Length: 116
Image (cartoon, rainbow, N blue to C red; front, side, top):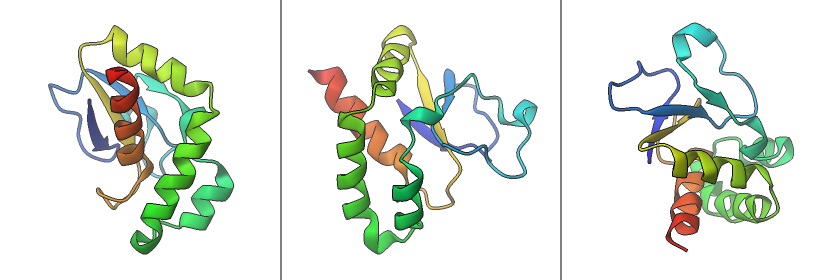
């Protein structure tokens, strides 16, 4: 499973491209984004997203809170199913920070679930 900014050009090895943001990325048309699936319900809640504000100093707490949200989110099962059904899945996100965003947390959570 890969993660990639939705603003980056699609790669030949992206496989199924799944947008995991609640909001559509600004300035990116649906045609240019090459999104196969948009699972906005798997994204962090609006309140958590606003609280985090992409502040790296809050990332550990954001990740903890987001994991709690994911524990009770039925959209995770849909994403797990997509990952199992496709050889390669790329999670797309809009944040500028490549290390401190929800796709990083989601990739780790999915990895844990797929190992179980």
